[in-house]
Amino acid sequence: MLSHKIIKLLIISFVCTVVVFTFPKVREVFTGQEDHKITSQEATQLIQNFRKDIPEGAVLGHFVGRDAVLDLLYQAECVGMRVYNGKHDDGSPALVIVGVDKNGNDIKNGLYLQRTFPCPPFCGDTIIRPDYSDEVATTGISPQQ
Image (cartoon, rainbow, N blue to C red; front, side, top):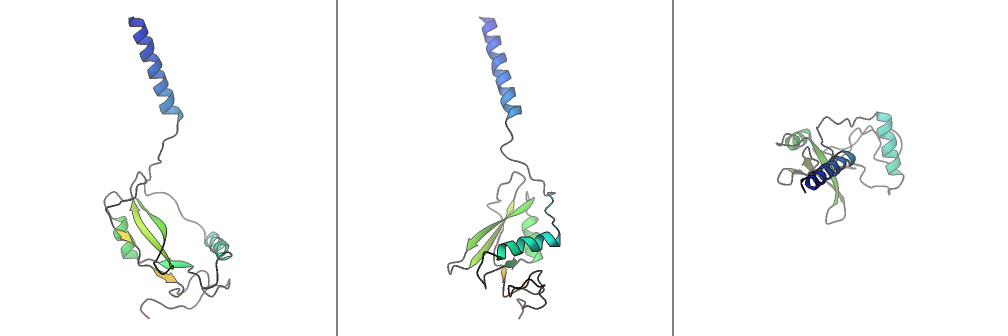
């Protein structure tokens, strides 16, 4: 009788060990040190690929101020941010930015960012012209105008 209990415990222990070491973790832990850098050529290509499928006059990008981003990132537990695509009631595109913790969870009771400045018309000197040509932009308007 005792040997059956020991064998049963050994089998359960073995199965648990196999399960723990065989299956990948459900979530990867974020550190805030992930590398997201790309070259200007890669950025330009990604933007040009996107623009092939959108109508002229569509929003190409959004400006978000440094202080707002830092306020978001300096929240306790925040190691990065997630950008959600949204839509205003009038149908225009919106971005919603939320802080993310090391487990990949949105910081739901934290700071949310939205009120971005869309390009166009707030384009300035962008890497891609807002007039839908492939040249580098040299003019634009700013939020202060």
